[in-house]
Length: 145
Image (cartoon, rainbow, N blue to C red; front, side, top):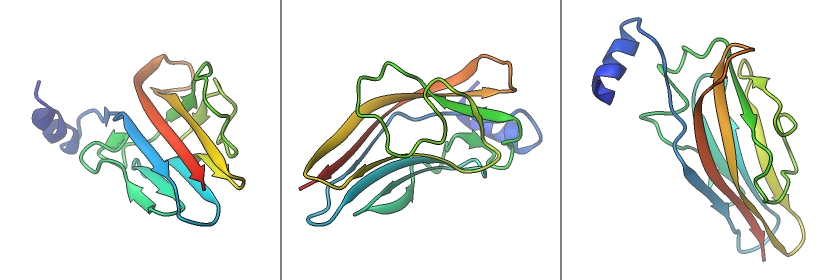
């Protein structure tokens, strides 16, 4: 079934479509502290936020759930084993499911010269005992010059 047909079915009362689009989120302001964040919104949107770029929606056509308000009962987690810098702000510990009834943020804050970076895998599932139904990789980088 094409994505267009799935979107049409979902807006007429069918099942929601869950999608995580692999994305790079990078920020390197010319001065001051640097931060880069990925934000899973309770309204079903997925945002990136950077000290220079500000908050922007990653992909309007897919977000993390379409239609956006069909988000009840979903959970997200960050998988361990990424080999990257640990986030300064985490919505939950690695490998821990957290419900998406509220906005959930993972963020790098860089206050000394250098770079915090990694490729991070997130999963989304429906229900507190189910298996992941979608997985996405996000490169998140914050560089302070």
